[in-house]
Image (spheres, rainbow, N blue to C red):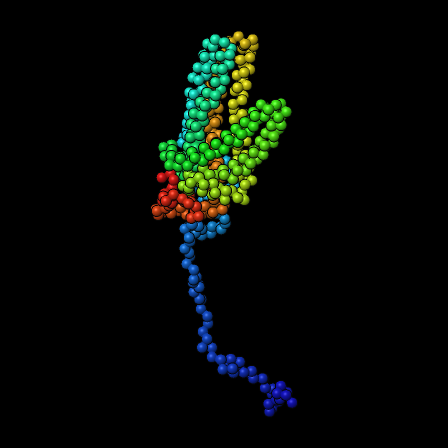
Length: 417
């Protein structure tokens, strides 16, 4: 019989006794008070952690996190440049500092033009006067033969002046692009003073290039002339060989010119000699040959087309007006012809100045881009700008790497200071 079936005496059922479970288990409720609200946990990381200065200030509370582009304090963004940036950056040089850059280019063009006119005009007047006063045709032929040799010798003077002016313009544009990338805007005198410091190595390099081109061209012409003296058949063979040799030399010149294209920038900014600059240019362009060649060719084509579009219509309109006014050639339209020639000359000087500035600036832009790609120059430029802004003494960020042989004072200060 179970407990449930058991009855007390008298027949009244007894309800089952259920013990208190906590008390039966020895549980004391007073030993475990009810929980209270706990304080929020404290973070081990301070709300504004220290951020390295090169990454900028910490983001504001609630601001979305994302990629921050590299800084652009001046002419160029401080990261390896895209192809589009390479194309427009040289033109931006003119817009950013037109007085110093375009002014220098215009001075170079004027010096070359004035030197050429000053040498040729008196000589041509002298030759024409002597030929007209010659007593016989034999004397006139002898004078003309001597005039050709004299003309070639006299042309060396404007060529040398143009050589100096071209080298000087390269130095000026390299300094302007380098300083503009750091956010500086140098005036006319500061650019000229900085370029003058490296004028002799620049002149040496420009003379080497011009001399190599003159020697190659002279050898081809001399070979054709000697073949013409031998006979017609030899002349034909010499012309054909000269054409094929010229094409080969053109390809060789494009290759060497691209590999050594940034030598002027290295000479000016790194303060090294010609030999070291050639080696550095060869190393920096390795792996970027076609990119460099394509940029140089494309900008050259753009400048050439722009020059033709501006100059040729003026010349064509002047010729058409002269033909309408004076169809028989009596001299009635001589004033229009003179005005057309003057306007064409002025436009040619202006376009020539722009072309020279853009091409020289392009070489400097390519140099900076190659160093950012191969030597992390962009990080050095960012560090230089931050330290300069904080008042910390800085050195030249474009100084030659340790592997290059630089001047003792190359790392002391930027080239334009």
